[in-house]
Length: 100
Image (cartoon, rainbow, N blue to C red):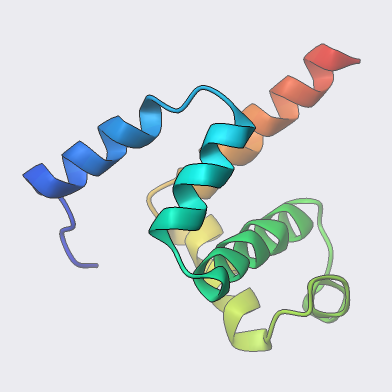
């Protein structure tokens, strides 16, 4: 995988970390990304959640509308990636449990 680390990337991530609400996230990401780019990110995260819940590819595809290539890529990242999906899914699960 390409090394994406740079001063510019660091500056962007610092800016993202300064966002304080969902509304601020919407405003920033709507300016930063195209609608298609955002929809692709939303879909990949949805696929990751479904795979993590133990659903099979066909069910993930039906529920998410994602192609088998996208599902396979997300699954590969879940299994062998840098751990970003797992970290966020764990945190989302912790947040859900703490609200109950």
